[in-house]
Length: 114
Image 1 (spheres, rainbow, N blue to C red):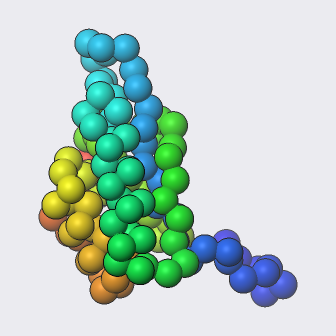
Image 2 (cartoon, rainbow, N blue to C red):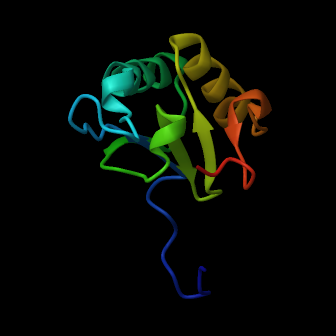
């Protein structure tokens, strides 16, 4: 929650991409084993190509939604997405950050719990 005397945010949005890797065969799986590292690299490059201002794509450790991976969350809104392909990343960047809406098809909601 922001306070009136808080400085303005340095970034308008932070995109945290889970790149946690568990041992092969782990019952929950892991985002890195499902390709999240390459998707994060693509997202960073694609956001730069699109010229989206004021954002930061960050690698995150476990975000604890492993069963739905690869996952990412965008703050300050706290919207969660599952992204399995470059096309999914393009859809998220376009809908959420360029247009200011949501990529509803890819959103994780309160109903998506393991």
